[in-house]
Amino acid sequence: MILQPTIDAALFEIAEDSGRHELRSAIWEDYLRPVFLKNDPAEGARIFAEVKQSPNEHIDLIKTTLRDHLRDKPEALHKLQHLLEISE
Image 1 (cartoon, rainbow, N blue to C red):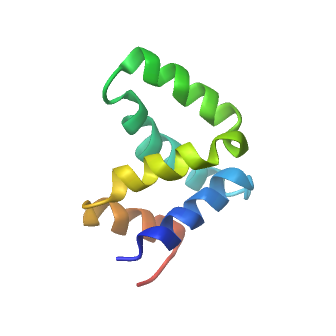
Image 2: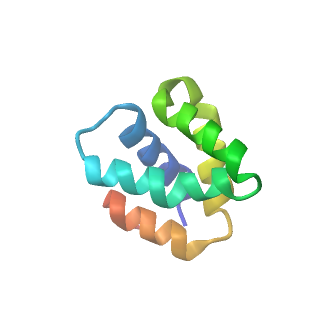
């Protein structure tokens, strides 16, 4: 599994506003939002909105969140790699 290159590619799609809006939306909604909302939905929703509004200011938090979500979850990692068109 290539975790770090996958995270880097996802960060690029988010931070650079690549124009691939469906992909950006999938990363935000399928990979980041659930992690932010998991422990404290109200506080998580506030933080998620703040991070989504200014992703370039929260790169480290996004990177850590993706790493925590994808570590030891090969199916989720593989799905994200497929979305990002990364082959192993």
